[in-house]
Image 1 (spheres, rainbow, N blue to C red):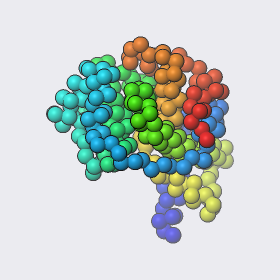
Image 2 (image 1 turned 120 degrees about the vertical axis):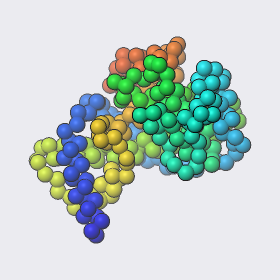
Image 3 (image 1 turned 90 degrees about the horizontal axis):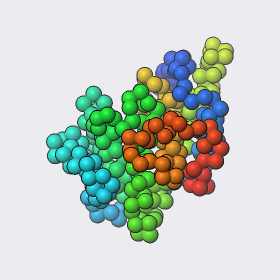
Length: 271
């Protein structure tokens, strides 16, 4: 019970702070995303059929861009990319060293391709996604995942691709549910100056508090980056807009997101 009280106390304190953060999307767009990413997805288990996910990921990058491939090889050799099964996957933005945690199932292939893309982005000069467009920070990694999907033998890897697509939607639906709850409490505080919590709210609070996030941007802004990346990367892939990876952020900035969401490019993956 004391733990629950502390959780609520910490949560209320956090909501008061985050209610002051500017959201990079308008409320109507956030509501569109909440509607697109419903919470009816079920997480699917990955198989364990791939013999060497790292080798396959490297083959993909060599095919896609040999400069990227050489960057990755050099970084692994010099321990700027650290691959293990202990620490969580993250990039240290101070030195751009990246740690990749392997799960030891077929999801490792997508994990490697995704995190390698973050490394390439942060270690390219200039960055593929400039720092000032931090809200697009996941787009290039999602884009590379989908380039991987196109490169893989569609018949041989059909099951893996389907599971990855489903699980993206599953995790993003959870994120958007957390955004919906957080947004409600922030609006409540801004309108009334207080937040009343009862027992039925505990599960909502636990979901919100389960996410780590950057205190500089806030939870809502950080979580929104993922569904936005999924939608924009799908849009880029389907329309073959990208001639140079350095144009990705420019195309995204010039895209009318509100209009795009009316006919979401990931709608085919919805149940």
